[in-house]
Length: 115
Image (cartoon, rainbow, N blue to C red):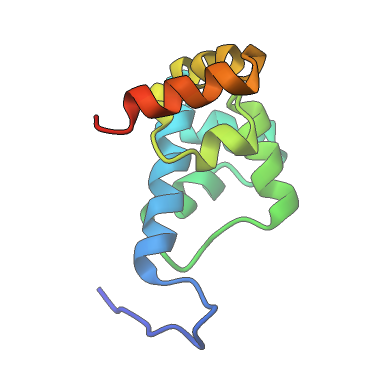
């Protein structure tokens, strides 16, 4: 496999490209979509998603990326969350935390500081 160096310090690395492709595949599968059906849902050629998932040279435009994640039933926040497996639970905890008074928040922070 040919690994191309980043063009500059802001360019995506092959590892970052692989991570995005892997996440697209993971969320596609969780949505019970084949690569072909997702490609067609977003009005692309039937092999479009397969190319994204199997190469580092092909990534979608921002508009197409949004179409992909919407078709998979997720948000950009869910896609880029550090641990997609705990997203729902973490958001539930955050929702409760936001309802606390500043004093109670600080108590919780102190309680969990040593964990």
